[in-house]
Image (cartoon, rainbow, N blue to C red):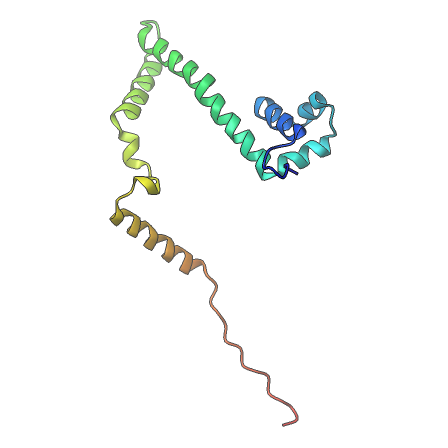
Length: 146
């Protein structure tokens, strides 16, 4: 369990760090000298899952994205790059910079106008109403003696 102050325990921090790096519960248990069951229980906790996701997000932006951008630049600047790779790289660059993907992306609530919010709320209310189970009216049982 996380500590009462909201922080992760030492084991939970270690589990989050190793799982973010390797994705292997078995490796994590061995590295931390902990039981695999204990590691799996820690992984199941929402606070640990959130920390793993936070570390993945950080890794994506600090390590992987710079590598991807450098590879993208190499493909576009190397005259020996295969034509198909260049076409895909150009398409990706256009889509990401000129906003073709923005048109297909749904907006976050803080990005919406009041009218867009009202429309989104209406849609969600309709979906919720369609999923709701109808209430059944039950007849009271008749008294067999009376």
